[in-house]
Image (cartoon, rainbow, N blue to C red; front, side):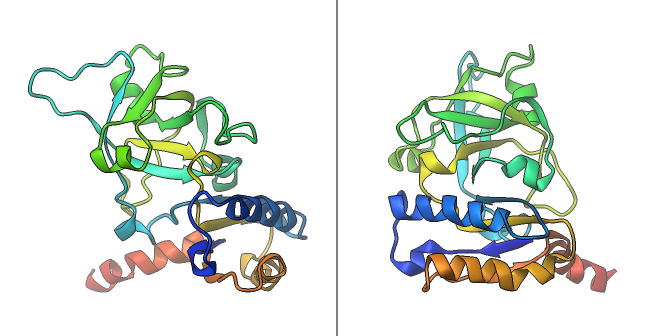
Length: 231
């Protein structure tokens, strides 16, 4: 079950400690609700946010030099919290998920997709190497510093309904300061949880919007409906 929770609507900015504490407390409380198996936050709802999920761009990795005339490889940029991959059922190929230790005052870290690791580290030594953005916009946002790769996740194509291999770099919410999307893994009827989840969030912040609640299955069905009609 996914929700949009745009904290900007409450006047909080990116990196505001109140926003990060809100994510932590909302996750903790919602996880205690009956029928909830896991909770996390992130920056992108698969498929639904495809039109706004173009953040990313060229990047560089430790030990890889593009050939003459070859441009730096490109990757998508996603911001995720601890337990993101387990809550969404995305296997970790190697390494670990982000944890509570991955904060703004800690070591800069990243998780990369399997296709990125295979292409740029063909010897299988991606873990503990460093990756950094070279795109001028990303650098202007303070994202140009090298980050140690602590995990490799199976490829997830959250833009195209028909899957394509995609290079993606994930960075922790606590080091970026933004998420905006809530993910709740339900053991029963997900839609039955919407009132309880909304109530928890409103108890934490009365003005916090809770929008567009839907299951990923229904999000996908909505995205493919024009193709089904055409077919």
